[in-house]
Image 1 (cartoon, helix red, strand yellow):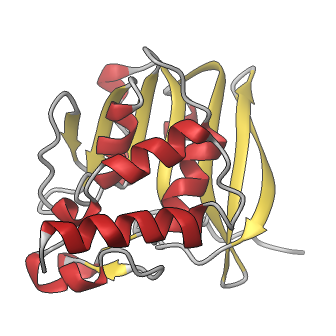
Image 2 (tube, rainbow, N blue to C red):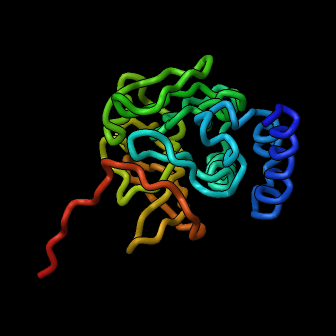
Length: 210
């Protein structure tokens, strides 16, 4: 597949997936129209690059559909110079988009997880649910997938007033959520049901009901 083919598919993604699905932040649209998503997809799966479905990666992981990435970026409302903790960076596509938007990105990915090579992005290897406390406090927590629960360990790495975007798994359904941390407490609002990649290591603890 040629670069021209990918450019055409990227333009089609913007028009048919993003603009028609509430991704109306012009900065987000511009950066997703510019950054070559195919550079972050394994060679054997590049034909799927701009299909609105998760793309399987090694180790049981997957890359979120473009629409999910666009919605997360829109809701994050990042501003140049802010510090962003990106959890579940996968191959680095979202990290590249965030860096293009002018923020300082710390990307967390598991040991042995997908390779990440994005200029200007700090990569931290380890459990996703541990974050990267060495770079705290962060202005934004960008969880690039769905989790059952946002752990306290991540919330504690955020500045007061920090914004959070993530997916939440509820009864097998994944929902896009956003919120803020105020006084050390995270409040999240559910925005819409959307198909998202579920990240490992975020299972909610069992709660006993009497």
